[in-house]
Image (cartoon, rainbow, N blue to C red; front, side, top):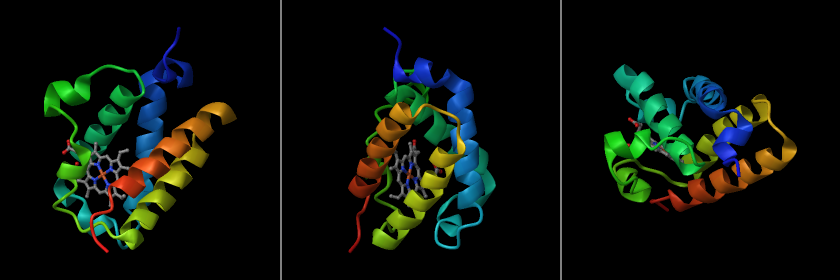
Length: 123
Ligand code: HEM
């Protein structure tokens, strides 16, 4: 059986998604200052390899970074509902901008929305 990663087109799909996402982040007044100005390429690579791994692709993320522990890794960032909504808006534009079947899009989107909610760490 094919994994979600394979079904949507593997690395090329995730590279497209993440490059669209960071193009939106770069223009977002709330998110832009939160991300490392000098290492946007690194940030993009971390998110891309994490999502690839999550959806059944190669384990490059954990090979490089260890256990994801995403809530812990976000603890240093002030993520309130405004930041979450900004992140969701950028990600929604990216998810809407990539080519994929509607079944996969719904599956991907419900995961991302749920994960974004779980990253909120401030009132
Ligand atoms: C809710 C709003 C969110 C905000 C404001 C946010 C913000 C950030 C920031 C500022 C970074 C540091 C960039 C870097 O240098 O890597 C980061 C890292 C990361 N984020 Fe988020 N994030 C959010 C939600 C999410 C969600 C929903 C996911 C997963 C589905 C995610 C996955 C990651 C990953 C994998 C990293 C790299 C972790 C590492 O290995 O250090 N983030 N995030």
